[in-house]
Image (cartoon, rainbow, N blue to C red; front, side, top):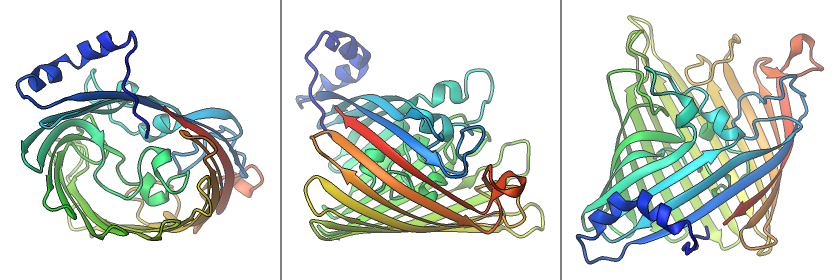
Length: 370
């Protein structure tokens, strides 16, 4: 991502905004650098089921049918120094509205109206060489796909990414143990929430190991009670692993497997779910890439995905896409994606009862990083 240093009339206001961190940095002789940037992701999607509300079901991206819209718009300021670091990023877009719709409202000063516009607000300090502590609202430590479409091999996010946390609020401790191994410990409010809905907290670990420059193995988990205080506690245990391979400079493979368990109430047995995705990306030229994906999500007890159907959310999917990067900072992407479900859960104007087992869509995105 390009991060040009801003030297315009905005500098005084931004320096004032970041002045508490700047004061800390002045106690050290290290150099602190502040950079600014932005990202605009626009799209048009056509859902073959033609949902009447225009809201697409069971994905956060693309969220709307048959209209030109903004998937994600963000502006950011990032501070980097030897002893301090931080990032402020504000956002809007249809994926933001979709992803933050379940954010709880507890009291009168919480909820999605404000929370969805804060992508990250995190401050960090280095405790020792290779050891950092960060606190605030920040992107999640789980999974292999980013919240920001530009950083993913496919334009749309896999089901396992859409149904695991993208963001969290809490504190994290990161240790770069060796150039090949990084470990992270997180204490957060819960499963993708900023406003806490119960009296407990969730804990999560992540390990990233790169045995070679062309292979990275990541493992991660998140454990906690994700039920509101108004109902009995049910511990949720989520774990996953991802392997990224780049056998050549032009070929990339990413394989991910996520599994989860949530305890039952009383003597009832707990419930399990899992999801997996395999993505392959081939870049024949500097400006063109072809990407394909197969995936599966299995949640029959509807722990994560509520469908109201007999067999829950049991879905297979596949996609193929083409990426064009004609100019530095510009990414034009096309993707065709389809799903096949055990139950009729997808809105479809042509189906009896208005629901179908299959769903498909095509989407084009033009994005700019600046």
